[in-house]
Image 1 (cartoon, rainbow, N blue to C red):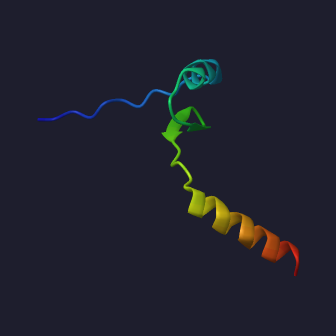
Image 2 (image 1 turned 120 degrees about the vertical axis):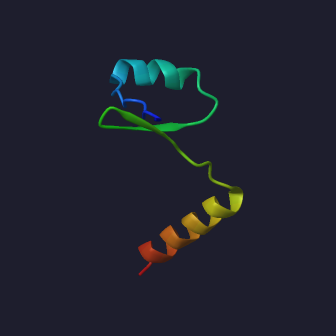
Length: 57
């Protein structure tokens, strides 16, 4: 039988220590850490264009 690993929450202190040496960004939410996807240049351009468009309405 296979057992699942127990999820243990981490403290904000541990999160910030790990984030300082991480090679990618992470999101911290209620003691859990999630890897954030990196944005491509195209994604940034589309996001900015959409923001400008919505702001001009």
